[in-house]
Image (cartoon, rainbow, N blue to C red):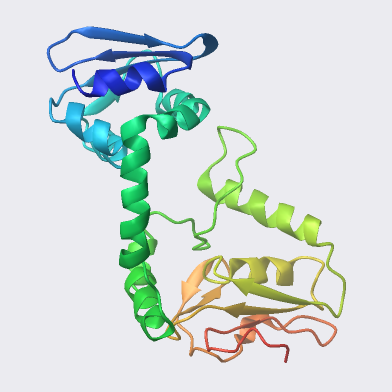
Length: 250
């Protein structure tokens, strides 16, 4: 299983990783400290080299297409093992060299001058609501959910997040909220439905064309205009906008 086996000997310093190779052979890599125990099966010989040169990329791809699987353990167990040993991976001599090269290439590949920034954002985000609806919750939030329990659904975990944010903000009437990049406006909707009805909330994201959320569903709306269903009490109004400069107090 060379050269992967050589790297794993240095990588696993906490816990135990047993790898079953494509021929059924078993290789055990045990650290000097107690930790997670993971059994991983590799069904593709090419992973011996791919995981050696770029483990963070190819481990995820191999897991998605079934060439990397786990036995008597889970993906969570593996990620825990990886996280507690990640520093050791970075200290592996060849990985040090590869990461330096990667950082140098990234500086060129990910250059984002002002003239290119809008195009880059549009390429990344403007894929249509139908696409995002495939994996987001009903409120179309693409910031991380907050799971209080393993049995929480995605929708309940997103609601947990909204509740947590509202409690930490300790909002009071007359304050303004700037919602940048957390989704289709569900945070502002939640604040409007809750006790913070006099709070002004602006949503800001570039580029301009986008949709305004309606309740827990989705409804097309003219960018930059106020959503009529979001008018708060006591003269307050939540305004969702994608126009540049929408984050300025109004």
